[in-house]
Each structure stands twice: as structure tokens, then as C-alpha cells.
Image (cartoon, helix red, strand yellow):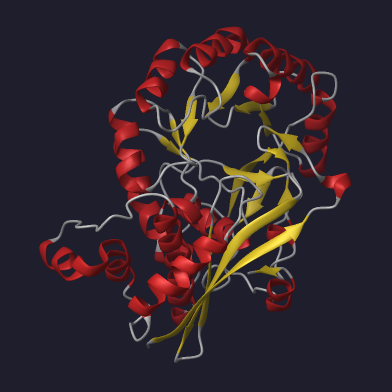
Length: 388
């Protein structure tokens, strides 16, 4: 089997005003991602996803160009099933021969950022092809799912102190979720305002629903520590990205200062970033976004780090269907995987991009047994929302 085509499309889907939310990213008026299509001479097509930002909206023209202009020429004519070697080809580029021969990385420059997101999009598509070629779901290729369904938490929570309880209670009622996540951080102004919102959420939901808080990396170390002191008695599930990803030692300081579990990872790239977090004892939960951090191949390496350091794995799944399916496959097969993120914001790339659905029942998501990623992309949808 040979790769005959590699295409990437920036998909930009407007969100109706009544469904938009406001966070530290501003008012979210669109959902954007780069959808990757890898074609083969066997007629098997693989789908992947690459992201230019961790939030819902981000321009993807540059990322799509990296895939179609820089990576595609390296891949045409190659066997798509040689996924590990092709990851090294894309990562090391002109020195890929030395890297493969010598067994260690020799990257030219693109060790972080859009270069890795581009690799991620292709890698996810290659796993989709491998699964389809064998008539097996990706989770089977990763060692087999550990259960037929996984618990999920409802991810959203932008309402103010007066409305946050009702908003999160609506999530619980909608899908039977027993865990929710709300946004905190600079969008509230001061840490005490975020703490007040968490307090209101706990009062509304009672003691049995888990509440996680996500600061999107917007606090300083001192602000994050202050917030943790204010919410320690509220049994917070975890505090996500309390400080910027550029300050890993600061992240470790926050973790040491409080009993509140710390999670992070959606802004990180490759196993090397996650190894540093683990070595610094900076987090309890690792949250790679497979459409950013390097795809399923790199996700396996990150999961191994989590297991080796006795940490837990909860992939960042604020994404379209290809990345969601990839994260589901990874989390469901790893000993460190324990929960799934389920977006409760407007997400047309999860619910409209593909013909299949990922329903939630009793707070759990079924792990489908369809071949590959188990998705069928609506190419008309991609064409309608394509941006140059």
C-alpha cells in the first residue's frame, strides 16, 4: 500500500450568536480546526485532525500549508502502515535517515508548535488507515479497550456566580454526568471571584458531583496558590493549567503548595514536554491534546510517562471528531486513562463533521468497535466550511 495524496483543509464553522460563550479567549464566534485526509492506492482513506490553538477558534491557514507543502512530499509513495518510521521522517526531516538508523531524534528545528500539530494530524490519519486495512478499531491496535465504555465529564462552565450552579446542573441533567468542569482564571478578574463561582457551583450541585476548574494558564503562581487556598475545602476534582505552560517550575510550586490535584498538558508538545512535567512533579494528571502534541503515536509515549510516574491520563478533547475519536482510543486502552472530556459548548466539528455520534448515557461514552477511528467524514461539510 502506498500513500497517493495528503490534503489538509482549514475548516471554519460559524457559531450562532445565541450559542456563543465568552471566556478569556474572548467571544467564541467560530469553531476551527484543520482536517487532514490521507489517500492510498488501495482506496483506503484516513482522516486526522491538527489544531492551531487549544480553544475553539484559531486561524488554520499556516498549519494546513505545513501539511500540504512540507509534509506531503515526504509521505507520497510511502507505506502508510509504517507509522512509527513516518513519524520520525516528519519530525527529523533531512536527517530522518540518521535518526532511524541511530535510534535517537535529530530534529532540524520544528520541535514544538505548528510543526508538531501538523505531524499530529497526519499521524492520526495513518492510524485510521491502519485500522481500516485490518478491519479493526484503533483501540484494538493499541492493546485493546479496558472497558466497553468510559466515564466522561461535561466541559463548559462560563456563567457568572449567580448562574454557574444552574448551568452546571443543566449539564448533569443532560447526560447524567457525575463530573463537570468550569472555567476560572483571568476572566473573573481576581482569584477570589473565581473561588466564589466554584463555591456557588458546589452549593448547587451538592457533594456527589465532581467539579474541576480550568484556568487556561492565566494566573501567576501567587494567584494560583491563593485560589487553591480558597477552594481546598470544596473538594475540587482538579485545577487545570493554573499557570502558563512556559512556567513549569511555577506549576510545580503550585502543586507543592496545595492538596488540590493539578492537571495540565493541552498546551504541550511531544513526550519531551511531558517528561519534564513528570520529572518536576508538577502535575497529577497529564492532558495531551493528540491534535497538538503529536498524534496517537506520541500519545502512547506520553501515556507511558504517566504510568511510569504514577500519574493519570485524561486527554484534552475540546476538538473535532477525528481528535476526539483518537483520544477516546488512547484513553480507553491505557492503564493511566480514567476519564474523557466531553464538550458542552457549541461544537459542530464533533457533532456535524461526521455521520456517527458519540452519545453520553449515564455519564459514560460508549467505545465503538468500528474499524479505524470509527468515523465517516462528511466531505460536503468540509467543502462548505473550507477557508483558504
